[in-house]
Image 1 (cartoon, rainbow, N blue to C red):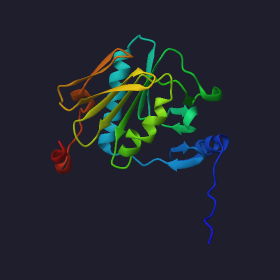
Image 2 (image 1 turned 120 degrees about the horizontal axis):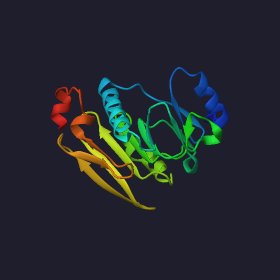
Image 3 (image 1 turned 90 degrees about the vertical axis):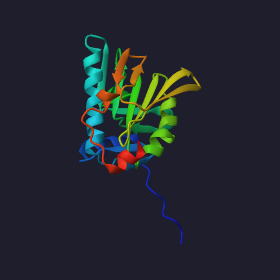
Image 4 (image 1 turned 180 degrees about the vertical axis):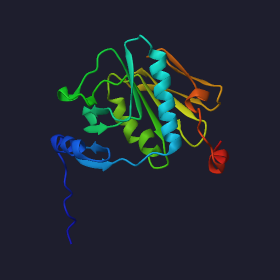
Length: 197
């Protein structure tokens, strides 16, 4: 028996689907992939980071956005929704859409068991191709661990791993310091989390 051809979608079909959907999906080279729901700790961390960035930016020409602003990665044919992103200066929109940008400067993802490998691997490799991206941050929701990647050159990234609540994450490209105790504010660890720490 022959395998059935799977349907690949155009950008236009995907964007029309997203406008009507009750949930968010990524677009990966023609496939539409539904995104899983998020835990309470995931939501707390995203909220903490977004609030800290927004407050720190003050009157700077930088803005933070959370979950619902889509990013288009042209070289990898990917539409995705980072957990938090930051842009300084003007936003560059995909085909004049106000819900999709192409120039994030900082992208922050909160890791879950189902997305950790993708966020560290294929997704990060896609983000590498964004000329605007200066920093990429992965925040573990199960233990105190932040992986901070800073672009050094076109093909080189430097990694710093922070694992103590009194550590400070410095986002150099936007001039903001985020203490880990602020990132993890109100996060409740269970027994499984304590064993990972």
